[in-house]
Length: 177
Image 1 (cartoon, rainbow, N blue to C red):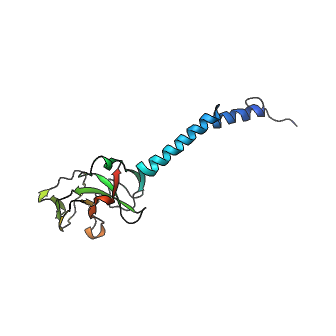
Image 2: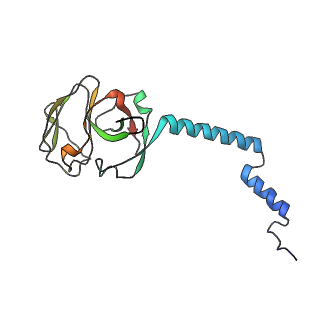
Image 3: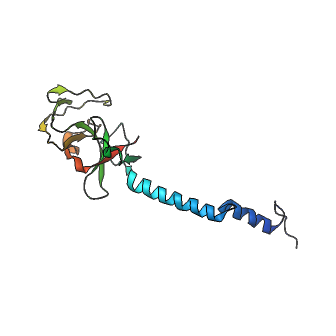
């Protein structure tokens, strides 16, 4: 009973090529690279970039239900959140987070009148808004450490949204994409 010849000649040669492909010609160097890559991934995805799954339609059309995004946790070490930033907010527990847009900064007064946002009595231009709502929400005065956040999908009733004042300590990071 004859066996079919392997492409490289002998079975031993085939296994040697497979080993070189799997671990390279220098296994110690390959192991060191694997360790560096694992530690880097652990640090980046454990501390710097937080994966966030969008659940719900409150950020439509900017972010879609079910999509996955990353939140940069390091950006606010060097600066404070700005108006227009889409941020990740720790809502309830370690793994429950919301993605919302910052529209009000500390010390400001925010109000919704017929779907338009007014900051300290001045109309806020929101180029990212596709459709306007008919929300009427009384003025809210923000404290020295508070931000006002809201989703981009304001066609829903305002009672169905999670929005409003958020303390700075609950803002985790800024959405990357």
